[in-house]
Image 1 (cartoon, rainbow over the protein chains, first blue to last red):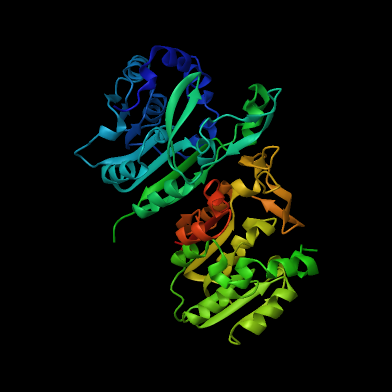
Image 2 (tube, rainbow over the protein chains, first blue to last red):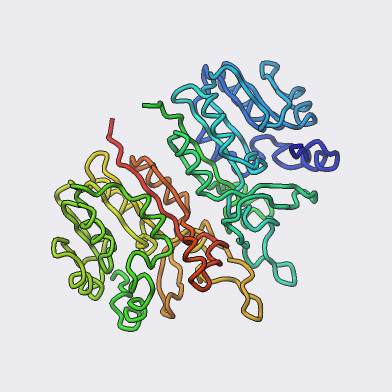
Length: 246
Length: 246
């Protein structure tokens, strides 16, 4: 069975209290960067993989999307999404890996901080390619390979608990890692940068943007510990376009 | 003045004894990966930035290049190159940053492990764009941002000297780092992955390949310490194509 930590009670409660849950998109340190990389949504058909509370779906509707489909494994997340976001959005409760569409007519596919939960990036990229129209756009954020390689996703500290640096190890050994997120054990799958980028290229996507987001100036000044986010990259945001087969 | 460590006697002597100097291309752990990413050289005009002993220039000539120009800051390196490689190759002794060409007719520009010595990646990318023909190809290797971020370029070890992991810090603070290479102090300039890739995209290059090279199976079995190279990425190889302005 695919991991569904978001439906366990303690994790869901804690996740619901995070800045990115309470404040919505503005609560995510990477949002300002991601927003600049979003395509124009006007009149577009959008698919959001791992939509969670539906913040990105709602943003797309508010920015003129013609239709929006959100997929997520978590019933609890989608229950909140259905309550809080536009009735125009169609939510599907399913593991991303099991999702299928028969019509291949999406203009845009987005995914926020979800792909590090998937074993195979190649499988989902092939599907997304088939679901997109020619010239369709694909934008996703994922945890950075630097952040996922070691496993614990925590700083290396001295005996007093002060941060020394961020550790990297086993970089080329892709696969399962056990990390603690909000005090709960979570399984993630480390992939190298080579895997993320070359998988796109090999599946006929043109890469149109790659950014390792940094917190905004305002966040650096107001959120405790945010300055440490300048010490190592935590996320990667990549935009790509489906190339027309020649 | 631009750093020219390769012309200092002790460094040059030690560098000349390295595997990649004695064995040529085959001595570099990344060569097998780089070779697969090289464009077809037949009938092409090639420029090699930071050509050193001229191994890549020679390879291009042997694979049918019509003309080859190699640029390097080091007189000592070029003296060896001129002695050991084809007389058809034109060598220019100059800092890359000061290099200019009036004719913009190169088919291919390559650069091996040189750009981490340059302050600005944007400056050289703009030049390369202007030197390439439409659809011209650009391939380079550089030290990986994971490898350059912390500064010392050394493993983090326990008190007995055993490797614990590789440290990453100050990732988003681009610029000068002091490392020791072959026992000599060398200045390098850390750049993020975002800088390497987005600079290409913003200067109208299409990214065609990105690989973090791993040592070959043979090297893993025969070269001491090579297995540790699977623990962190040391290099990045990127290929790109000059897009025709629409």
